[in-house]
Image (cartoon, rainbow, N blue to C red; front, side, top):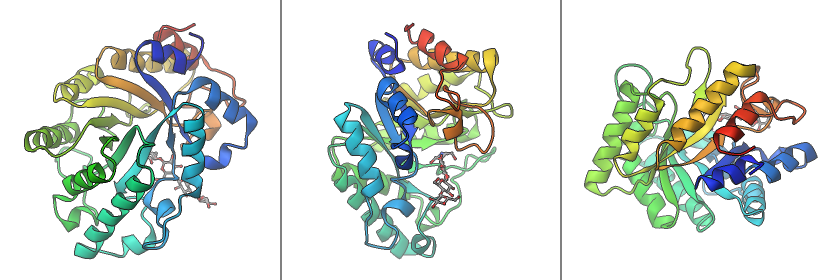
Amino acid sequence: ASTLGAAAAEKGRYFGTAVAAYKLSDSVYSAILNREFTSVTPENEMKWDATEPSQGTFSYTSADTIVNRAIANGQKVRGHALAWHSQQPSWAQNLSGTALRSAMVNHVTQVATHYKGKIDSWDVVNEAFADGSTGARRDSNLQRTGNDWIEVAFRTARAADPAAKLCYNDYNTDGQNAKSNAVYAMVQDFKARGVPIDCVGFQSHFNAASPLPSDYQANLQRFANLGVDVQITELDIEGSGTAQATSFAATVRACLAVTRCNGITVWGIRDTDSWRASGTPLLFDGSGNPKAAYTAVLNELGGT
Ligand code: G3I
């Protein structure tokens, strides 16, 4: 295979990217998107502020553009994200208690229903745990509606779109640490109590301060052993040249070594598409040329 998507498919996996709707008219961007990737994640277009800018008024134009284009091209769609403390519209930021809980449930229902049948996997809840050593939930307006807000979001998403796989997604959970231990305990509890959860997303934003953990594969495996799929959902790695290529290859190798790691998504196509203000964390340079990291990933997937 000579593309990321085709090589990953031979390993029984998808290879995806985050996509921004406003870039689809860029022919360099869309050519790489069509050629290389078998899954897409809307980078911002499905977030609460984008899809429900005023309460009860839904706006799907940009997300629909990405989803319909992906389906027409035979690409899977990862939905991102139904419930998150960040990127909330201002009206939701100003709600609390039962009013916020009801608004969250309605939001999950409406958005998951709109995309019913079109989403492979939903990030139902994003980034709900605190960084550091506490293993606590992140304080947020959603958390303050009650500790059960996460399971309510999952049950609501399942009712709206029973065929979509429902994921919990977070960062700094890539290795075994207090935060990932807390997510692990939640998933274990959800499985024990029958709360619907099908997958856990590991964002995998790596840089010098937060590199690929040495126990990455072991961490993916312990979650898989709970009976969920694991997915690498927002991969990017700061750096360049051989060092960066080696880290990308090691990340892919870890996924391939875990049977239930069923897909990898990079968080953008070209370095210039990255959310990071500076740096070169992706697989293609600003001109759309494949980097050493691209070749390393392709080869690790068994392609050439
Ligand atoms: O849409 C406005 C535009 O109208 C305005 O002109 C422009 C000026 O700055 O801002 C635009 O909104 C920006 C939006 O991206 C679209 O480009 C926001 O300011 C900016 O904050 C937003 O950043 C996104 C960020 O999530 C928001 O939290 C990044 O693109 C996106 O890559 C990033 O993705 C997150 C994942 O959702 C969750 N995990 C971490 C990851 C990286 O931060």
